[in-house]
Image (cartoon, rainbow, N blue to C red; front, side):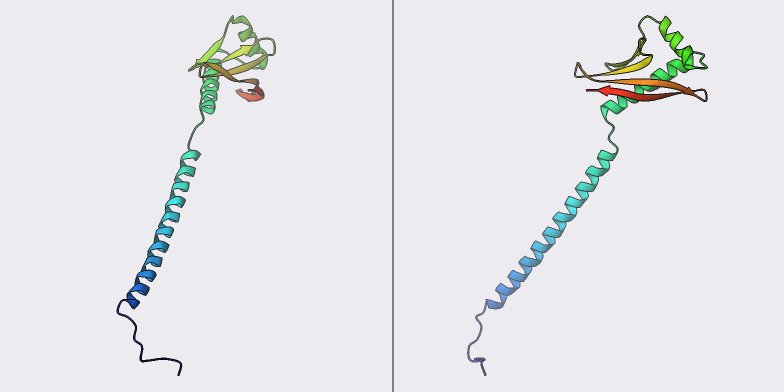
Length: 145
């Protein structure tokens, strides 16, 4: 009725539709591939950041470990008073890790940890100590930037 069968399509007319549909399929597959690579790179960066150790944390851990080894190896302690007496007899007590150090503050009966980063003082933390069940326990009571 409304179709005019006398007109025929030109020779390359169907080929244009095939190229257009093929181009759409290629673009969709490239987009999917791009999204998958973004997800993979995001997962890898999250994985790497989960296992990254900060310099401050590593420094703190090493200094407190060295302090604990020193106290356990050289002091026979039963209470906090024994540790206080030992450090009052020492003139200048410092334990170093790289350029940061920990020392005993005789006035306040606490340990102070000073971080030195790029040859500049970065942060200072104060630690109180307690003896519970024969072991030293440290607690950060103050820190400053």
